Length: 309
Ligand code: NAP
Image (cartoon, rainbow, N blue to C red; front, side, top):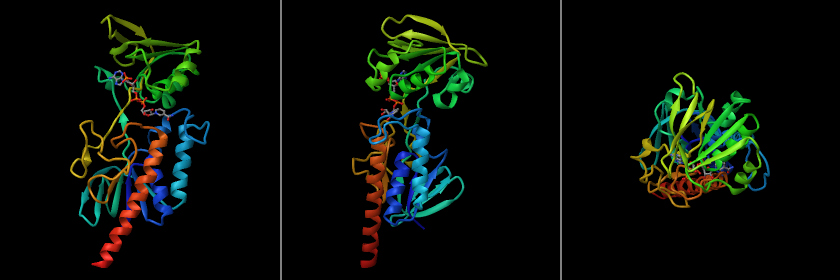
């Protein structure tokens, strides 16, 4: 029997694991893809306090080694559901079931697709959701990045180092991402902003050959020849399987306040998967600490109540 099972091995989940094992708890982290979560794809992280520059991969690897080195167990398994048996929870995965006293849901978020015709078919054939993974395939080519958040801006910065030309396509005049990144991009000769525009269509059957754009103010449409399209229009949560266990808001996020407690005793949530306004690496790590300690406190008080009965 575990004391804490954490669903999700990203920054929030691994931070929670560190706090759990350091408090002497038996902790298991279950992750469906790879450790590190979203940050593993960030070319460069420059806003984590105390670490001026680090790649997402380096950061995630350090976190993973820290958590497992301290004694947290880690397993690559997809969680299918969590059953609430009051004094214990059953975590069912695609491989087996685990009994645990508490659960921390730290499922993060997945990439939001553009939702246009041909997107699925051309993914991996010119369309990518990860500049650091696929950017090198587009050396000396022309690419577009869709989005106006920090991910799109960081992707554009990274791609500008490889590609002949990088078009940043954003649906508004103002960027949501960090102003400092926008200013740096403006100094790059091979970066061009296309503002107030969205990608409405894709050219090419087997391989992306170009994109169709539309100006959102005038309605004007035009085509642009590009070899690659990097989609960075944000994330969306993936919490459907927990809808019987915890309350989910209208956008799909797990409802919990800053104390990371859900309405279900013994079930906590941390990171981008919960209702919150700021989704950053720092807030994911902070949530991990809060949820990890809240789970430890829950376990201690449950054990005291059980002993008194
Ligand atoms: P984001 O901040 O949610 O930005 C998404 C961008 O895509 C926005 O500019 C949005 O436009 C645009 N967009 C959304 N749906 C669209 C659609 N259907 N068509 C066209 N454009 C669309 O997402 P993100 O950049 O992936 O960042 C996610 C979170 O991670 C944020 O909190 C971000 O600050 C954080 N992050 C942190 C770091 C770091 O700490 N180093 C790095 C990357 C990301 P509007 O602006 O018009 O809504």
